[in-house]
Image (tube, rainbow, N blue to C red; front, side, top):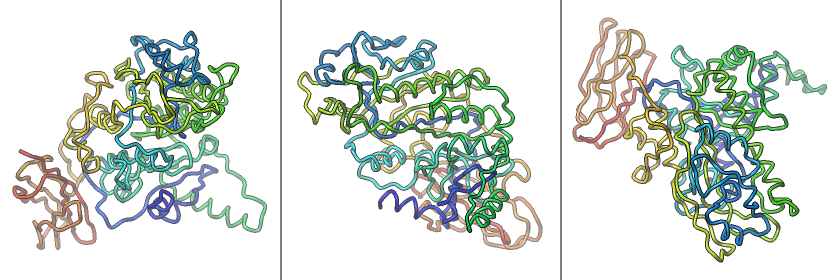
Length: 533
């Protein structure tokens, strides 16, 4: 299925067009589905936040992170775009490797112990199509797999069952994920629905918090458009909490001007400090498809690519400084990625063509600083087909964040990746020891849940607890394919009460199972995880 066809087939009609709230353009990426939308309810208590920065277009990693120790081969492979050795910025705690001279902001974060570079990140059998490669990075699939959910969407689906039904609620009143930018992202697509929302641009964000409404055009359809906007103002669930979070912050650090990424990150910092419990924010900056005129021929340390890298570096530095100023930096880590890197050898148009592996930056006060990996191997006589070989699988970066930042058990993390990938996952040293420090959640309280199990993770059997309001009560177990495994309860109760029943799963394969409670006109789904002995 083509990317465009998938996006349109998975979104409801109302989500195709921006919803306007006081001039604030939002795409609510939700839809109804008969599939079970729950995995597990909040087994991890954490206030941690991940900020994702997409460098759209395929970033030239070799001119961003430069192999000083192999400079002669680097220079010979790209004489018309190579960065002069005496202009390369050194990194604290890293020898033989430097970064582009435009990236002084990131250099200072390395000096502060708040940044790390992971060398040569990619995946086996890389794809060089922008759309397909982006899908692979967002879904965390193999290059020969079609996966229609995103890695972050599956994670959020695990944490917040039944979304969007009964959301927002007292336990989670805020958006699960927010993307700054109008492009629909696969990253937060859950197994059945998209778990996030999209803010079109910074201008409409500020329209929301200042109460400015975009005027309807003076056309015959103007009244109708104004009416649609008014209805959406009344129905948008998350408008109030976003506005309240933004208005709770009255002062921030200084951000660079004429920098779209900085504009996005400034909003993210404001919402985090303002109290949103949103766990994942996505931002992006484009222009990295540098097939030609990547540098200025008179000074290869300047040009289009240098401008982009400078904006990324300055924006991240300002964001990190702002998080410190707002006293929330220990809650936030960020990463950069691009759908692919560029070839080792430059082309005759002072540019670079689509390649494979490329470096990733991670930043934050809880990041283990320095460099992971070694400089990529560059042949003495590189040709136009030579690519940077992969050292680290990007899925291992995701898995490490899920396990060591969002505090998930490794068994759960493995289950969030497509078939065949979990055996390849590594736990990488990218976060400081103890970065997680999660606290086990309290047991269910009266009225908090209608069905749950204990132990939550089991090997042979577990006890399923449920609350009935009286009348006919049905408790069933389904597998992830939607097949009925067994019926545990199918009877009438004379009064409201709590009851329990044992579920024997000794002969069943490991994986996720769903307890579905139906009582009167209501139903609740609760996921349970069976693991090996």
